[in-house]
Length: 169
Image 1 (tube, one colour):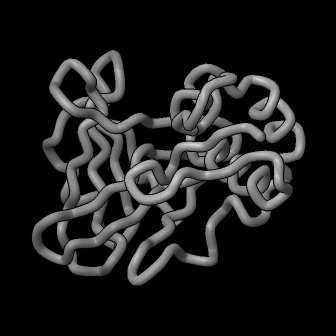
Image 2 (tube, one colour):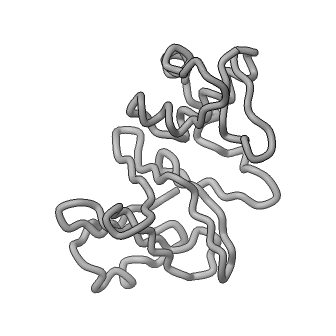
């Protein structure tokens, strides 16, 4: 689980708050700027995640009654090379394949799946992120709804580089 230890206005003192894997601190000055995470792999590194789109590429932070979600995944290309997502306060790590403890497995997404199918553009393959943005939903939730719609024979997922894009049947 992600453990949000504090919300602060500057980086000073953040390291003292990050003791265990999954501990995190949110830096805000008017808007969320950074999420600093103690790497969930246990290597001890602190991972700064930019949340401020004005400062180049930025992740999206969602906070609601279901918990904290970060999109897209965090994939370190140095050090331990950890790859993980934060979804509904859960840290889902990736290794040889996706973890089976994904929060999406236990969600009731019936209503969301109906809304996703109704909102899906009538063209070829479309990214689940585009539809999540249109619906104002968490992308991971929409992706899980798409997987269920594929299993029900109502959508298909693209292959190769088109993976993560879906088409309504």
